[in-house]
Image 1 (cartoon, one colour):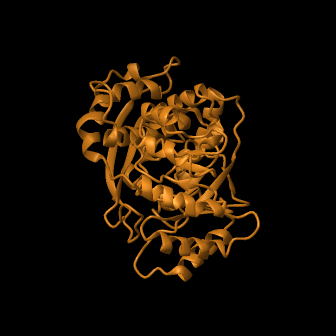
Image 2 (cartoon, helix red, strand yellow):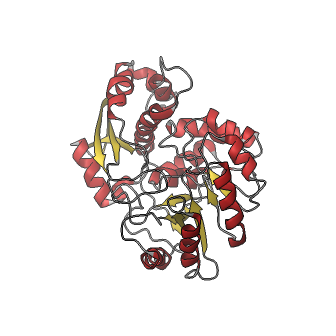
Image 3 (cartoon, helix red, strand yellow):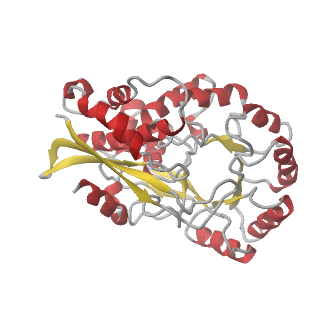
Length: 388
């Protein structure tokens, strides 16, 4: 068998929303199709992938470096020991040929997007959901198909007052979520506290609020928010400062005893390891948000999970950023703590397969081959258009 073609295109996911750092009015992503010569039900097996929101499409890097390296490789050099399926680790190593260490940035997004499509194809060739393939290969063979999800929203946009913010959050709660997240740091501390109070006023027993500063604060501001947020018993206080400012994160723990979360903008195992070594994160309460679609893909994510175990962290403390089905599959197959969800944003790429409902803050993953993209009609239309 072999990979016969890799296609990519840039897709818009623009929106008038903003967080504390960027607006999404010109946001894009890359969509990839990996076409193989394996035939199932009369059609070639095609794996699909795309990158998460917050980083732009990476078509140029893919076209210039990573796709040619895969297609120029000897086909057998990319296969597993059976010779009947792709080995994602060999494909990853081929993509990384002649790449120096460090400088992860946009390169990690390009590789991570292709890596997602490779894993989708591998699971489809084996005729398994990706979560089951991962449980078989890297777990105990038993996947937990019931995955915790939280609703991310609460962005700033023109004309959005506290009443509209409450309506938005109420809509998530009505759909079965019990944890909702809102943005902070795009307004003054006083205004943000008023916004937080407005959301807390609609929460019932068993429902929680998380807040996300998107790396906006310097140390003094992060501490001021930490002191103001401490009485609220939030689900977490997320990404207070620059993601690479490990000293800020480590210092902040002295002012905030409740759970914190960070990691969505760390794009390699090495950066994740530096966070664990130097960022003062607490394995008994804090959360890690590494997103495989932005950080070199699942091959690298497996290295990150191994590193975490070596440092005394459970995979259950990982709740990835991004709101995509790839992380849902990883959560179910490898025992992560859950996944982010964007109920109304970044469609059709976010969300769940059709018919999957949130119940008590959890979703039950259906038995679909691969990552399960074909179970989401609007997303599958986009993917089929690229593949055809």
